[in-house]
Picture 1 (cartoon, rainbow, N blue to C red):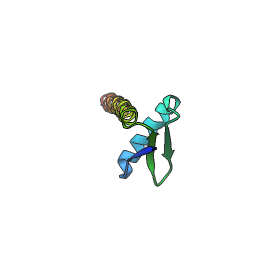
Picture 2 (picture 1 turned 90 degrees about the vertical axis):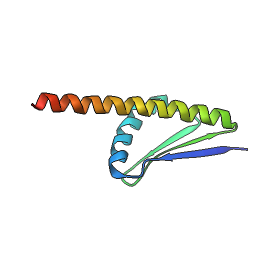
Picture 3 (picture 1 turned 180 degrees about the vertical axis):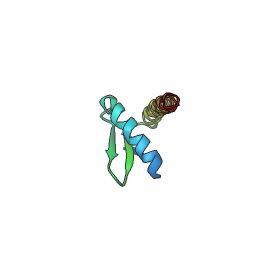
Picture 4 (picture 1 turned 45 degrees about the vertical axis):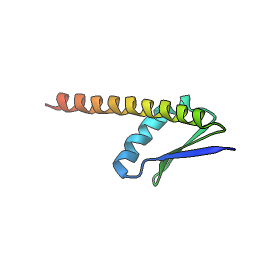
Length: 84
């Protein structure tokens, strides 16, 4: 049995941020995941035969997204400081 899960970024602000981060992470995508990035949707689909494998992949992915978001916020903060 194949198990599938989707993480979607629905609001426009999260889509822009997620799209940048997903593009940066794309070289690390596994064969068990696909990213969809367009004007209307930013989503990642995961699939696996085992729930444990799916959960581990999603957990790793979310940790990478969190790190990317932290980097993005730090860069925005640095830009604001340099503007002053």
